[in-house]
Structures are given as C-alpha cells and as structure tokens.
Image (cartoon, rainbow, N blue to C red; front, side, top):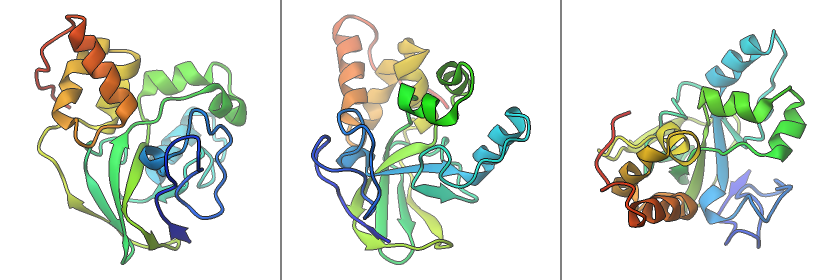
Length: 196
C-alpha cells in the first residue's frame, strides 16, 4: 500500500492510498495522514469490553502495530515502516461522535478519554510503500518527554499540562500547539517541562 502526504485538512483523506476519511472537516490532512494503534492496546480493550473481538483497524487506525508503545510515543518521534516510509508522531487521537457511533458502546467518548490510551496520529516525512508485517523501527526519539498520551490529556482533561506541550512545538499538531499558546497567552503557565 502506498503512503504519502494527503495535503491540508479538508482537501484529502488519509495518507494511505484508497483509505477513506469520513469527516474531512475534522480529520485527515498532513498532520493526521496515518493513525496508529497498538495491537496490545486493542487486546486490552477487548478485555475491558467483556471479550468483544476487535480486529486490526477496529478503532479506525490504518496502521496497527505490534511491540510499539504507540500512546507512549513522543511527539516528534520518527518511525521507519518497511524500507521506505518515514513517519513522525504529531498527536494523540481525540475521540469523536463518529468514533463512538462506530464502536457502539455506552459512553464511549468518556471511557476512551478517561483511559487516555489514544494511539497516535503521524505525518508522512518520506513517502513509501508498506505491507502487513513490515517492521516499525523508531529511528528518532526527542528528549522532551511529551508523549501522545500526555498531549491528549493536556487538550482534554488536564489543561494545566498545555504549557508543557510547547517544548514539542516543532512537531506538534497545529491545533494542539494553538491551544497551548492560547492557554499561556491567557496567563495559564510558562511552558514548564512536564514528565510522562
């Protein structure tokens, strides 16, 4: 499957050829070209959902990993997938009504948000072709400590974490960066560094 930059939000879908995005107004675009979720995290959700089977792709991810801590990935972390594709982590996933309707579980957005196991959105740095079973290698890890899960908590349930996102500004999803800068501008913090 060919993976490339889909262009700005609202103009293209996901970065995977033939992969549709249902809500182009709120999803897709360069900073959400790929959505990754760990198989191990799907397995944990299967247990929480009483044994309900969740196939790869059940959460709308177009990249299901094995052996990669996706929610613990650092903003700006780069992954080589297969021989060609290079991706960069931009943010965690914010659950929406479309996701909740797809899953069909009671109070799904709240449950997903409380768990803060988000998976990660990635942008395409170098396009390439991938196939099932290709290795995912972390080739760059920033030293700032801002994970996809921490970014998610900052923009959803723990707004006081927003200033900490600024250390990852160069790779951060633009909407999260805007929220962090706006929070600081309103006197909400200095951008102090946060832990995991």
